Image (tube, rainbow, N blue to C red; front, side, top):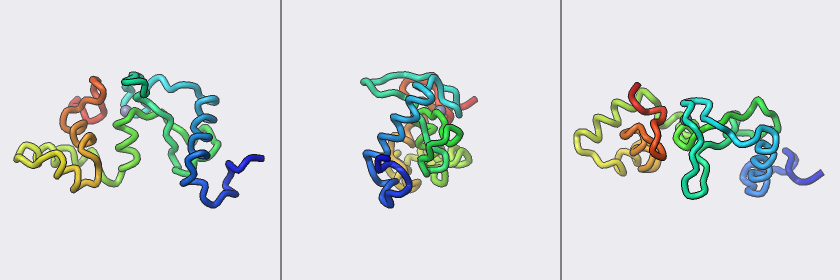
Length: 134
Ligand SMILES: [Zn+2]
């Protein structure tokens, strides 16, 4: 047995294990084709995939039902699910309209400026994202 299980108390913060589990999920589920949430297709920008496997429980279980494919934006929204809620989108758009900078709004919500930019434009990597108006 290698040191990849829950027995390692520092497991979550361990980069090697983190990569290990992502390798494992890639082997099991392959390369994700589209985002499970917004159904954006996979794009590759500068060698980086737009869609990744994300862990639902945050416990990085070796359990296939604990994983979903998420695009960068949904992943950010997922990771920050208590920060940028879809309900906040009109509020954010209004703040920007009233002249507040994206950086300042980002600070307020505890996210990076790119996230605010994606919320405002509704576009990630040249494609419509989950914040795009329907
Ligand atoms: Zn998505």
